[in-house]
Length: 195
Image 1 (tube, helix red, strand yellow):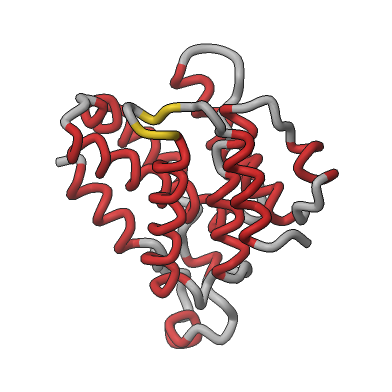
Image 2 (cartoon, rainbow, N blue to C red):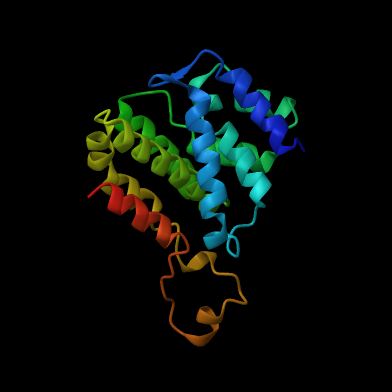
């Protein structure tokens, strides 16, 4: 399995020459990775991937979508199948309008055994995008606000009690299924940004 630093190097090569507004695209990628580090403590008890694994997925989250690199290429480079699955889940489709392309990623996430991890990386990405849009006044905030109900409907459900580990006290105390949103602070932050 490749190290996080090796995944970072793959991302730098794949995004070479690409822009994120007036910045190199890696500016955005590094912000997503910073969000992974920031938000990991709230969810680490429920995620089945280490912090380094999630950082690797964050480094690679745009590689397939925004470059010529394929999922197969990532595998041949030595990226683990777990990281590749997360990257696949957060990679938009290539057909149709923006909404249709996003729905393809949501559908892949919903079907994945790594849906919580993929949702975590996608939330780190979306928070980074929205915060940047607000900071830079680029007007993308309106687009994200418009997309937010569908984004949340597609991904919020999969962040529920089914991800509680068996030892979780809440699940032992209550005989009826309850909804416990593991990533609630992240959803709350995104909701606040998009008010």
